Length: 244
Image 1 (cartoon, rainbow, N blue to C red):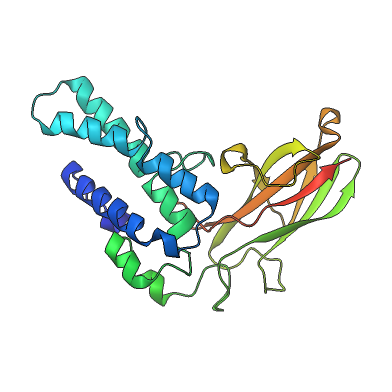
Image 2 (cartoon, one colour):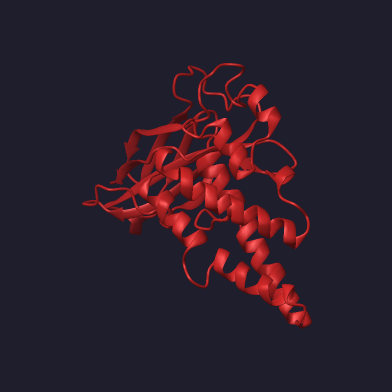
């Protein structure tokens, strides 16, 4: 995606405007979850956040009448909107949203990627990392296979692949966790999940404290790919287990 975002603020502004316009045009066909659509609203519509802050700060600097503080505010707004905090699962940005919901989404066509400005030619020719030349999507699934007193053991693997190895090109499989009362049957919102650790050898062990007994732990996983710039596959479907 970095190949398509210009260095100058003017180029970035043109990119983001085109990106938002075309995502709004196509997103109804992408099968996005309610959480993804809420995230998109926060990123591009919510007053005072992300896109709105960038537009406000860039307009001030672009006017030619600005102070040093205005430039600092503009740079901060661009970083938040363009890149965000990649280590914070509750944050979002143009890059984060693309990696979560667009880049690996099979319902997004090559033509749509080109229209929003993110198509990378090598991405179309290379086999998917993590699946050694097969056509299996870059996805992860998990389930609690052992539930003992204050302990969960989850199996974390790639659907359709027998091997429990991370796969070629995969740096790690990250595990995120959230907690709810036992009676809750719907996964918490994305912002409730926090990075908890990494799967080892296809499994994830989780020891809990006494105070967490009689609650429910919810898990999600995603693959982090190798490279100078961190990229991720989409989150898995959530799985859960009661802490007994």
